[in-house]
Image (cartoon, rainbow over all chains, first blue to last red; front, side, top):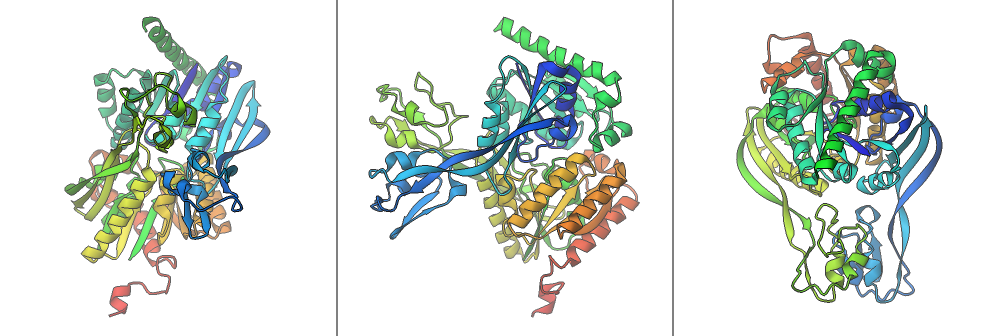
Length: 284
Length: 301
């Protein structure tokens, strides 16, 4: 079972919700941090990292001995990542989407592939929770290939909690696609609501059931709740603003460990999600 | 012309609220919202749209079933798993590389470009603004950011404005890289949390990688004074100027609910003064005045 925690707007509490739910459930879960641009979950789960893998994506390598400068590679590339200028083949690795088109089209077999470093994947554990995160290399522009790599490591036998990146475009899609449930975290402010609407549209497009956590539920206004009702989006948990929670968070400590009453609430949140997924699979 | 871009690494640290507050303080500036994925600046600026233009992204493969012979070449060639065994393209998985189009022996695959969003030139009470809306689940956000930044520079030129204030996206990936290239300076808004300092370090490294000078201000600093101290020390270590601290102040949320900037809400407060001081520091900073000249226009006739 895969639960992806997303939000649209950044800073609403995705990492807080996902890590606390994982800690509340304990060893039956695995955690994938797919916010590879700014991974933060390890700061709260504090896993022991056992190993690290470098991740690369294929980019073309041209053998100039074989190249006849026919320009077919440059013609097929939609991303302008390879061009032929006189007796030179220029490759722009950062523009390459690794589609393999140039290699397939080259009549001389002059193109092979080498790798561009995307970043790394860390494997670890904490209290029996299996932990994996992706960490994009600084200067790398494309996060989806690394996110997809992290996603592919999910263990189907486990409950997988995914911390997704903010936004509504390709990185978020990579983190949500194929999930059984998307848990959306928002705050009841005009910015929170505006971006939540975008996130809800994205989830609808993917056809995944979803529910809402309203964080800092007593700031701002009530519009988020009205919207949730109109959209029949179940509000599964509300967390009022408390300075002590904000302070605990700022220090990298977890809510369920500091305030035991919250452990039960996060377990309950998970059971509500489980019920929705179950109902959906029986009606489908 | 100078451009400052407000970024943060971590989302939700107060980029947009501070950008709007800076807009209220700036003179003769043009605004740009480069967070095209989840643009929020317009909620405070209430722009009146003057010009609206479609943003065309890359192509997406469409298989014509009447021409398709079912040979499976496309499926074999596609590295993104976007073509299923009934030869239908999953638009969400399609990367837009067009390899299937070129290799289809029946020429059965079309590659129409699609409208990925739109961008606008608007007027606001603080001057002109260029902003955009990327379609849901679309790609090419970096391309759209580059486009609107080019437009905002052109507009600033046209209106004789000497400053562009750009609200940037979170993260360190493609839209952020597109937002900061060629900017005069970056204002990095950090919150005093373990996540905030972690993400700031990555964004500071990104700024150094692309050689754009950065400056740091800590928002909601009093939620964790020790962490604020650590952030400022880290900034100094990385040769990034420290601009100051903004207190945790519910007035930010309250003014947001009313669609106002911090300076248009309630009586003057200590927080307003903090933001005013930070703005003064930004404008007079060496990064914004590389020749030590405060205002080029008044100096060079």
